[in-house]
Image (cartoon, rainbow, N blue to C red):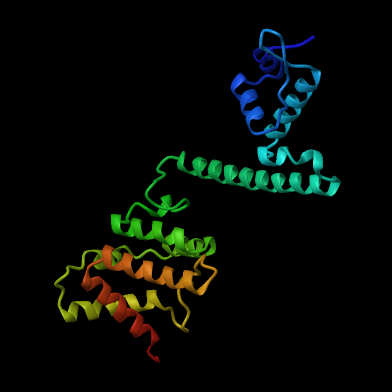
Length: 241
């Protein structure tokens, strides 16, 4: 018994286009033809097509499907272990997406702050939210957890508003007074930073890029008076008591 291309594709649960493509790349041998010129597929072709379909369904690249018959057991195991590791990473990625979707589905969740920051987002302005989003991209999860805990546990709405409302043309006395109030937040007694921001960067070049990006973001998101206050606050925080 022989089958046409369409019949073979239907039996294997695939498409005529796929069968022809497998011929084109050398995965499936061309069958003999009947006197009328039509292809005549045999059981061996169906078996091979089912094997190709199975391996491709498992994630084996078609380029490696062709090599399967030439690999020893160690070679085969290596191919399948690699695919399994890739699937594991994909599953982890999907789980992370589902966790984030679960958080975003809660009442009051916000998409313009990093995951987990919705509870502290209400008083934040657009520039604060933008900076947090950039932080989440560049700094470790542990760093962001620390930032969130500070925002949750140590709120000072009046001081926050004074900084956020500081005009570009604020005079020197106003800047200095605000810097002195901010200094304990920028650097706590004993010389410990409230938050230690650890970049995700793994090379000196990447670390330099993180520093440059944050500096650029600060300059874009806050006015010069605010940046001056932050510089003064850090300087006060480093001075001997």
